[in-house]
Structure formats: structure tokens, C-alpha cells
Length: 183
Image 1 (tube, rainbow, N blue to C red):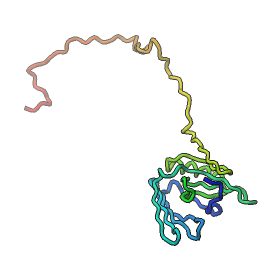
Image 2 (cartoon, rainbow, N blue to C red):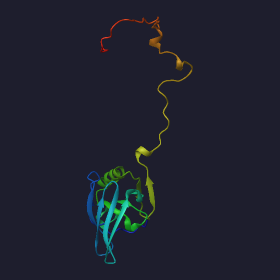
Image 3 (cartoon, rainbow, N blue to C red):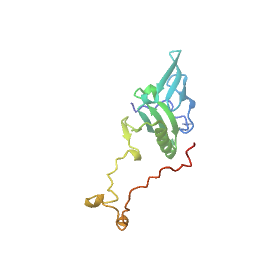
Image 4 (cartoon, rainbow, N blue to C red):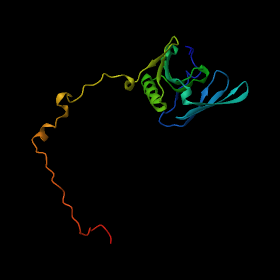
């Protein structure tokens, strides 16, 4: 992954992660745009390569995760782009490009949850850092609510006061007609 600015970075874009499947176009470094179809199972990208039509169909598992990239756009400020990250930079796809950092953070988490992919942060120098979701953080083992010890197998206190019933022999009735049995 390089720190180079992607071709789609300057153009605002937002794909709703809760409204899948989605169809949109992505600017490519060449002169043509790529048509993208995205759902929870995979991605289909249609574009032209050296004048020939090319269709790529990739499962979501082929992507490493959902990444956010912050770039500086001169005096205009920061631009955040949430993208579907692939090992090959040509196969990375934008999901949201915005100047509002809060919206980008919400979309970043929502896309990660919708596609069940980990979250990554692409730093300015090009390093990729995995970010843990709050649900992925390991918590300490909690202490049991009740103390388990020598008295664990005893009856509870309120049942100790009650007497255990004594069952005698059950009477066996013979020669009687049962109501439920047809004759």
C-alpha cells in the first residue's frame, strides 16, 4: 500500500452500508471510469483495460479490510476516504469520500460491521495499522457472582428449612376403566 493519493480522493462520494447491494462508478487513473457492483458476498468491477472490456468478480474475503485514509487538500483541509482495502492498490474501492471526519468515522465502522471485515488506518507515510473495534478488545475474566467453595453442593438456605417429602408406595388400581382409553 502506498501513500499516493488515489484517483477518487477529490470527488465526494458516499455509499450507504445499510442499503446493499449498491451500484456506482469510480474514477480510475486512466481516462475511463469503472462500474462497481457491491453486496455482502462480493464485488464486481467492470472497466476497460487497454481498450478491452474487463470484468473482475471478487469475493469479500479477497479484501483485507475496510481502511480510512486522511489526506490534506491544500487550504481546504482534510479529506477522509473510507475504502475497501486490497493487496493490489488497483483493486481498492472507495466507499465514502468526505471532508466531514465524523461521518467518515461512522461509515468506517458501519462498513466494517456490514462486511465483517477488520478496520485499518492508512497513515500519511503509507503504513497500514489495524484498529481494534471495542468488541474485539479482550476483557479480564470476571469474578463469579457466587462464591464457589465447600458449601457449593449444599441446598440453598431457604430450602434447608423445608422438610423433604417422604414418598410411600404408589397405589396400583386394577380393573378400572380409563377415561382416555377407547374400547
